[in-house]
Length: 167
Image 1 (cartoon, rainbow, N blue to C red):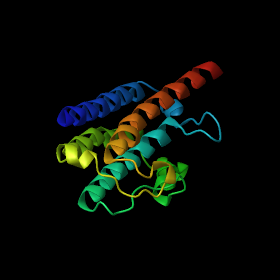
Image 2: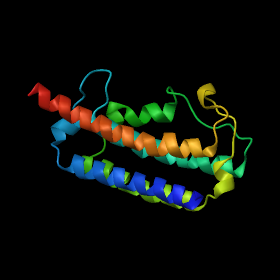
Image 3: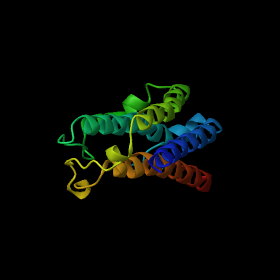
Image 4: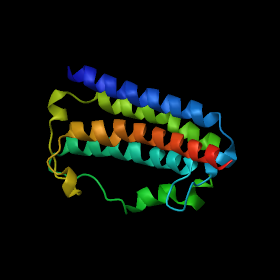
């Protein structure tokens, strides 16, 4: 049961990332770097965010498995998180580089998930985010990795829709 949950989660990440890469490769660089508004990320920023965030959550899973008393998570103002979406940082990378890095994410996830078992999924460690305190490791997989990638694919689709509506 658990292995199939982990395999399914890993497969969903891979499928979502593959769909994201295929979609973004079909877009112009102008659209990829365009911000729909001051408060919204460009597609390039979304890619950079995922390139930082998903490996971050994978490392958090490893830390929790190693020491169940470790406090996990971060806030929205985390420096590494913010740096990953900083426009100057993102603009240092070509779209090809951002996509090449994103293509490595599914393997990173799959490798980490292969090292987990049912007992690991039930581990509860203290969270820095009170909203997530008391959540098992499975929550990180479900919401902060799998659902996270899916939400950002939808965000990319919204950006494309907004771009097409402005034309």
